[in-house]
Image: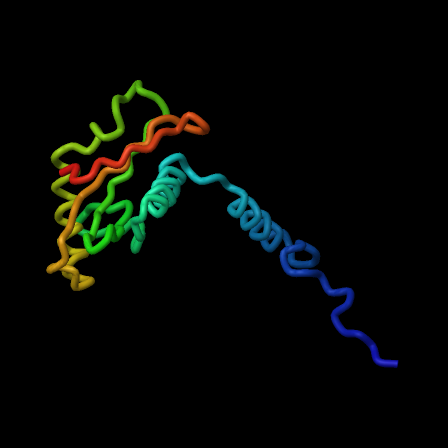
Length: 149
């Protein structure tokens, strides 16, 4: 009769006979998989879903260049749209769209120029939108400000 190999070997990630460091790494991996997203990252995901529902096609997320980050880059028909996502749980800090000041706009424009050149979209019409998310949970409201700046 043929012996089955590996029947009693420990499974990967079980922590058996891999030492304390292996158990620690396995525990850290399980913890990282369960860790909830931050409010900002969750808001960006929800904004991307909302834009897709509105007919946009999201082509990039968190594009970084020139000291700035563009949260979402999308296509709306033939227009390339650079989207800044601003979310607030409450009204204490003011309206979400008010947080996009002139310095932030300047950085986003600079990064958008780099994106357009890098991906050969410089002859495509472009637009800058802001997705303002107010509230959290079931009371969440989305507002798309087209041509915000």
